[in-house]
Length: 132
Image (cartoon, rainbow, N blue to C red; front, top):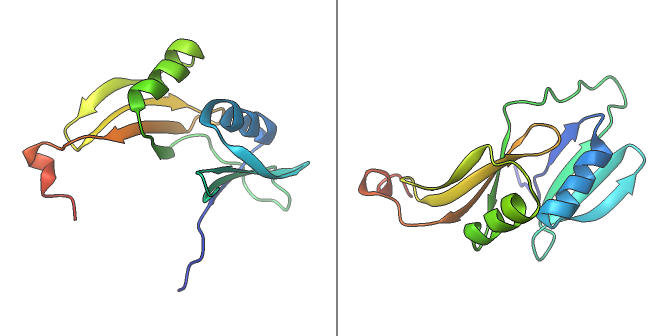
């Protein structure tokens, strides 16, 4: 298989709310916006995308649990300050150094997805050998 791109699409009745959340808090830009389907992009080349779509042909709604989206950022402390302290979002996981090699915190998006926001740090000896 020669994969050219990979993106995630959530079937939801909250497509507009999700689009607005990712634009406002996560710096996304809208690259496609139709009444029942929106695509938001991240990265300096818009290389990472999420889509939100109202079900059209009997597709099931996303069940609003069990998905974590990992966002690697340059400075997790600055993002924590901006999102939690300044914007007033609730951290569902506090800012902490983790032995597997990141400093992170987590918030929820309008669908209940966990957004794990992190910056890499040196892992402990226990986890260092897991990196390939």
